[in-house]
Image (cartoon, rainbow, N blue to C red; front, side, top):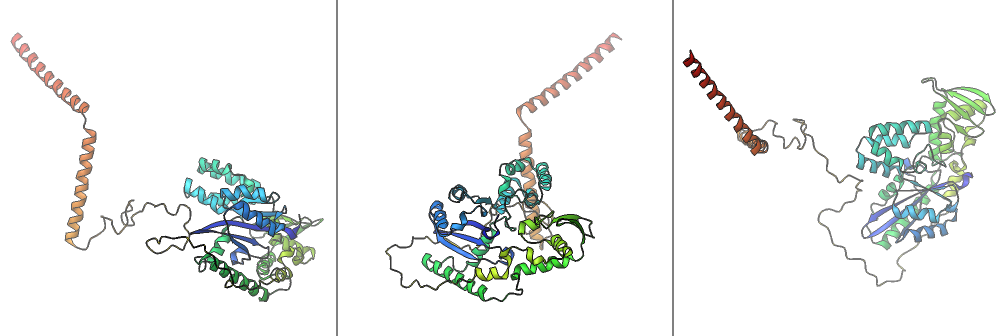
Length: 430
């Protein structure tokens, strides 16, 4: 597998009335999603996924290689088109959307169990976490089993994903465009173009701390290097070492020849983990030579070495196409995203009486400030009790029970009369 061709694409669709805007992010290995190091590659207004992805393949032929990964939110149009256009690439599912679906269908308890399964580094740990989900909710386990585990789990991933298992990086880009995304289409495209032009210039001119690694990989490496100094390393030969953590007694086998470690981070991020750094230093080599080329400062410079040429929209030919007529809705326009299931109302619990269905503000069991309000509250409570008792009596009293009670009374009265007759006959005979 060639390291120079590794590239990860996150695909998502953001609905912006009246048009749909698609953001494609190609994330180089020198970037870090946590630091929001976004490299904006392409943006467009689209109508059909087939047309857009076909044109994307025409513009960037490298995306057709085997070791490229697309991550999307399981949207039906994307799921059906990506395997057709990019038959050599791999189309994975966003774990964030799978977690939202599980939570919406099967409750909040299955969400943390799913993330433990998704982040499981080994297949044994994956099977163990799946059993816990099956014990908690069998339906959620069956739902997750129906999705191919290679498309979302780390234990069965075919290629390294560099820690990317969601399309959340697109939401970060959407937040960066929050001030300009509501503009008219042409003006919005021009604003995004200017944003990308300034972004590439700033990163091209930004000084880097190290001459070997870019700033973000260098910060990660420095933290791992500090932690590796307290590990115990035992060489075995042929580039194989056993690294022991003194605090916990955990042991990891590191293979420097194949660049593998039991923690799986060496393969996932294509850079030495903490255990590998300790083994490399024990061998007497430089850990910086085990990093992928995309992490180096030189590669970072070459990534942003091509500036975006300024352009103007004032010379565009006028068109007779008018923007669609939009009916203004009541209230303030919403700018934040609604997560799946967020619109469903949750039942409230009162912090005063701990009962469900109301809040502390409307609780009838809390102290009141005046006697009039207290009498009104007691009157409402008595009215509710009377209505409840009437409903219970009306539901519990039917014709069959009344007739049975009447028959019991009649039988008792007849038994008393027979006992009185027996006493009179006994006295006469005596």
